[in-house]
Image: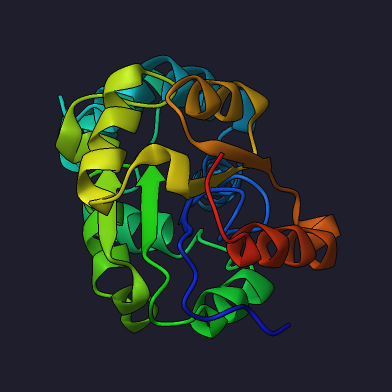
Length: 209
């Protein structure tokens, strides 16, 4: 795919379900259950009840793990949990290829409902050097689809929302992005070629309506 240069438009992405295949939460809870010998339903019941505390930065990852240990009966120490958690990321390789192919004059942002330690891990990834703006909910204190999250993205991008396509795999977040003035693009990894074509069309537009 060849993307246009000197484009007046830009793009921002979600992370989970866009730069990953499947959900990070689903994969991580499955891995924890398998490593611990505990039913995955028990792990997920506690995990999803408390994960918002991570997403808005109210808890550290060790605090979160301590709660899960008590509620789900997990004996795995934190020192083993953290690498297992980070190892649950399953990259969507085609999207990273798309990211690398974007022209230098296209500003690129990320708005992700994310967690302590995971967001730091992503920042250290050399591929993330292509991003001009990284907005993580755990650092912001607001998660999508809250208007504050999209306002922070627009500010971090440094261009008007109307000049930015926002790519997410959740319709609720696309709706919120569009309400905030962004151009929403719903993504699924099974239709990556179609997405690339649509993004190229977006970036090739000469004016913003």
